Image 1 (cartoon, rainbow, N blue to C red):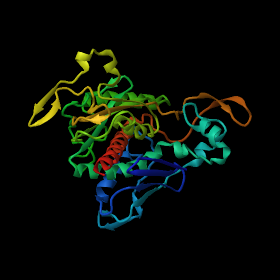
Image 2 (cartoon, rainbow, N blue to C red):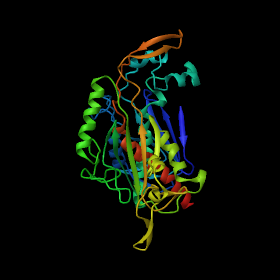
Image 3 (spheres, helix red, strand yellow):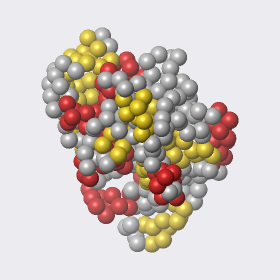
Image 4 (tube, helix red, strand yellow):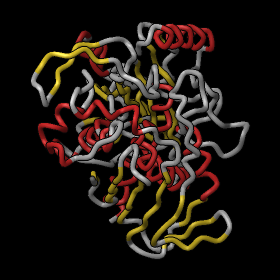
Length: 371
């Protein structure tokens, strides 16, 4: 099964969580475009499973393998064709853990709706194409985009904004920065920590909450805050040509995302205009705003201020607690106990995924502006 998005930079993701491979096909990068394969692998390693007690124990190396349209010399990859393809091998599948889910769907998961849409012809082990595993090829495309945006002076970073009712310190909306450096790692010194939060005390309490949910056979949701600094003013357009409209489909394509806000977001609905409006002023010969409730976007067009978004993730639906479900073959009510390996909270591994999605969406729009 394939899923695609983008206008100038077309990204096609294919495969499933328990298929031999998953991959991405990218169309639209100019010939001669270069990126670093080692840095790309470093970025993928941040999302890879099996590296944390707060994530699924499924271990996958997520090694990026170039296939088509690239010339590889050492760590340097050069685009030689309009279309490039990179893959990841699935090496640690346990499909037997999911054999009963084709008949008894998981509450909160896509098992039932996939059955309604595709029938039993869709041989879906695990989450198949609906699995969070599919964010790995998304991160391949996003990891490349992050490198290309950095060459243009655009830095992207993200952190865990909240888990349950525990919140981290937000980034400064005018001058966002992260204590470990933003965006993808360029060295071990600037790499994101194992649990990327700004306030370590809040992070410790989040970890306790995740482990408690895991111990109870349950899961917990949370929010990721992502920003892009250095985005030039003038990108985007009105209504359906806007930056929010371009980023939203990429964000909502991330499994488990249930809500998005930009800038002040929903809290702006509780403000007066005099509170929400961001005063303009001149600084070093350019127009800036003193605050950034608009999240770097006015009328669908970038203002030159940092683009800031927050993505809300629902709790992982695959939990070991007993749940009520049905048998699709017998049309009877059933009780379901789910086996397998799952994240007790997805936001930890979603941090680089949000960076990837932001990078792809912005690069797509910058390519339009360049043309």
